[in-house]
Amino acid sequence: MAAHVFLAVGCSRAPEIPKGNDQIKPTYNQKTGRLEKITYDRNHDGKVDAWTFMDGTRVVRAELDENNDGKVDRWEYYEAGTDNAQAGAERPAGVLTRVEDSTRHDGTVSRREYYEKGQRVRAEEDTDADGRVDKWETWADGALAMVLLDTNGDGKADRRLVYSADGSGPRFETAGADGQFAPAP
Image (cartoon, rainbow, N blue to C red; front, side):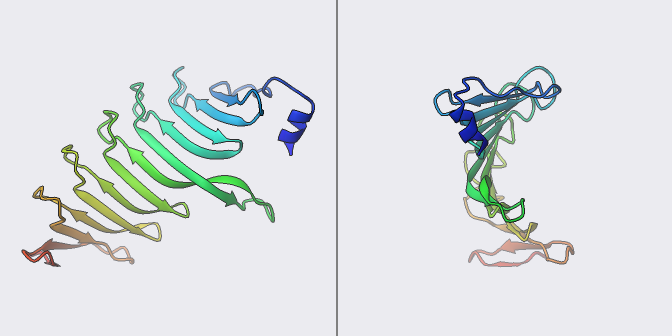
C-alpha cells in the first residue's frame, strides 16, 4: 500500500533512514520505486559485509562476507512464499531454500545446505578440497539424523553415523564390500 502512495505522489527520492541505522543502505529502482538491494555493515567496521537482493519486500538472495576479508563466502537463496506473522494477513516473503558456504573462505563453494519450508533437510560437503562431495547430512524435524562419509575417496559413503530422535549418542556403522552398512566393531 505504501508503495502505491509513494508512486502516486511522484516522489523521486528514497525515504529517510532513521538515525542510528547508518550502516544499512537500501537501493530502490528509480523507475518503479521498488526496493532492490540492502547493504549492511554487520560488524560496524565501515565496510559492507552483507548484501541482500530484494524484489520489493521479498528477499531473493543474500551474500555475506563471514570473515571480513572482502570476499563473499556465504550465499543464501530464497523463493517466494507467504509470511503469516500478522493475524490474517499474507504478504510476500522469502523462504530460505538453499545455503552455499565457502568453508575454507577461498570463494569456492564447499558446502551446500537444502531447505524445505524454511527447515534444513540435507547438506553435502567437500571436506578435503578435492572438488568432490565426501560428506552427506540428513536432517529431520530440525535435528541431525544421519551423516554419511566417504573416507577412502571413491565417491561412495563407507561410514555412517545415525542419530536417534531422542538425542542419544550416534550409532557408528561401516559399509561392507557389498555397500551395506552394519554396526562398526
